[in-house]
Image 1 (cartoon, rainbow, N blue to C red):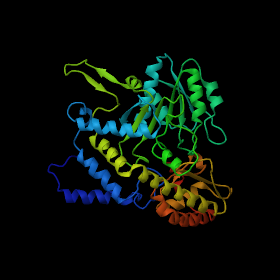
Image 2 (spheres, helix red, strand yellow):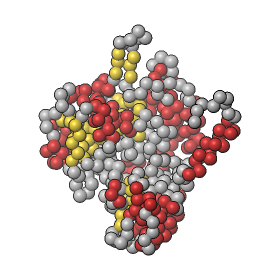
Image 3 (cartoon, one colour):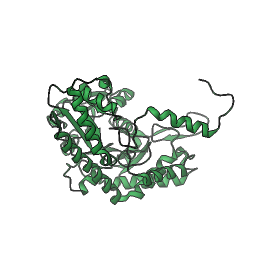
Length: 408
């Protein structure tokens, strides 16, 4: 394909874009285990309208050209710091997503420590983005096996540390199993050894506070824990904002200087950035600000209630199917089940569900089916379970397993 000589009319292009989606899974019908977060049409309109209000503005220019974006970003950071029990003097940076937030946290930890051969010690369940950040930053990653409850093994992590360890990592929750690591114990270890402790709350940052409001007993994970240095939290996940919105929050504003770039080594003048991006979409900031104000504590709490309702119904329905069991450690939106019957092959179940239009998230090696639930799943739980019952019956009969390779 090459650039056309003449432009084409928008109605024709719009129809082609819509047609291109024909083979995509339907997130609007809740038929995806990952990749989307949706509450309702009213919130979707807020997301779009707020984004479009700042569609052209470049957040790189917030200091001079667009002071309104500096104000909006500051208010988003302040609301998140309050939600996560940050002390006076804490700070934060608006990023493009959890990957960038984690990257900046590891960069800051490296720059603060100033070690020649820096390493980070992380649980085996920590997100692979830490490995990707380490690849960029020249860090050694020491992954430590977790406990039987899929939580960080703090004594084992302590044993893996040495004089060049610059950071510890805990997840709240981890993505593979939805378990919250013992952040209090990690905080004590980080304080004792004088290293940075990063809490990956990309999934849980905008959900855990509201699960607590609903009465779910979660272990302490935020800045209320002594020793927690930084937290990553995605607003475009359970914060329900348009994509391209995450935060790196730090206990002390001064810590942001360790991921700040500044140079005047060209004729144009000084260049300063706290993020890995240059141009930054103003619409992402506006959408996050609007959604957070639109939902408020009440709206987020209701979204959390719907998620946990979906989880409870799906868990009960799965366990009513002979040969399947639900993994119980997760107190969160992560929902996993697996076969207990050797005659049931996970890949065959996944293939049968795939044929029914469900995008499945499989654990590596076929060890289970993984779902990251959001409010829309409450509306489709019954339909999912009905199809799952048929899929299991089909798998028992030796159905096709062409979808075995689909691991999300």
